[in-house]
Length: 138
Image (cartoon, rainbow, N blue to C red; front, side, top):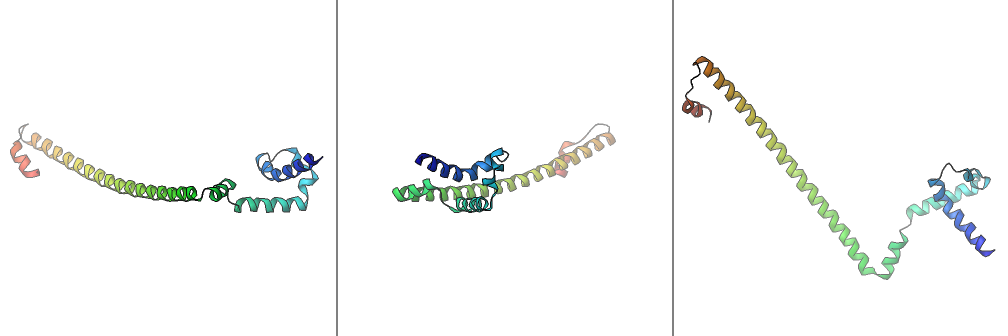
C-alpha cells in the first residue's frame, strides 16, 4: 500500500511534464486534472522547475567544487574564444568584400581597355602599337 502512495505522488509530479509531452491524451480530461487545485499545483511546479538549478550541477558543486570552478572557467574561456573567432570572421568578411569590389573594378577597367583596343583595331585596320597602348593605360 505504501508503494502505491509513493507512485501516486510521483505520477502527480510527473503529470505536469507528461501533459506537455502528451497533451492530447484522454487522461488529462479527468476531473483531477481540471480542478483549480491541480492547475495551481501545475503552475507552481512549472515555475519551480524553471527557477531551480540542475540537481546534477548542485551535486557536483557540493562534492567537487574545484571541478565546477574549472568547468565554469572553461565555459567562459570558450565564450571568449567564440567571440574572438566571430570578430576574425567579420574582419575577413570585410576584407573579402573589399577585394571583391577591387576585382570588379579591375574587370571593368579590362573591359574598357578591350573596347578601346577593339575600336582602335577597327580604325587602324587591325594593327595596333601595343607599346603605346601600355603606356597610356598602365
